[in-house]
Length: 275
Image (tube, rainbow, N blue to C red):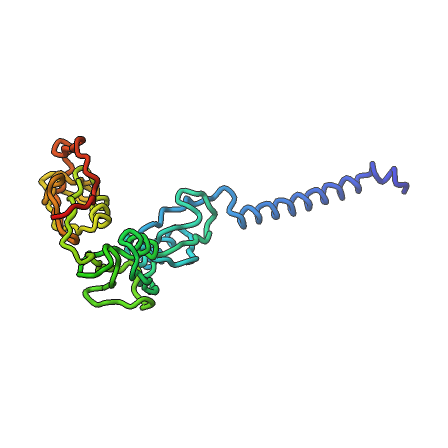
């Protein structure tokens, strides 16, 4: 039989039909296999894991058909220990089932770092150095010393700490300052209208300490406490003067009507005078 006659024969069409059925079946199988393998059209929305502990994730992500991998551990003083701080992919991203979510958790313990040498530094330089190292500035104690407003010792809980000592990051460091062998006093800075952190920083840089805090009836919740501002202070600002290392008490409120900022006050905060 010639090739031309074979192309128009019944046998050719039968074989062609069988071949098409086989190829179609193979392609159908391949596409369905890939569809199942890649979970085509099936996605999961990544939940927000921030603030969750590892124990929470072990059950929570299994139910979501996701997995997690701890990619890093850092220390954040203002967050709970062992909770998720960051994640990748971010919340609300669409992913496939069984996808790994890489997380950064807050360390269970604060790392220890070397105590910097603050001796002979000025007050402002010492404060800046402590903040750079992740420490908190504690009480200012003034003692007779030739160095006026320079650090002569550094303490934790009343114990003097030598430079290089391994100290927990985030610890509060008290500073012993020199008074220049004088009975010098300074003007009380105006704190009215400032938030607590701002007021404390101004007092520290003015060679003074924050005393007691009182909250009025407008401060109810933790969020109120965070946004409260100074509406009264004792000693008052202006003509009042106070010894180096003295304490200033503050009254705090979220009631804007109570906060009366004196725009005529011109004395530079921390300006010095003689008793």
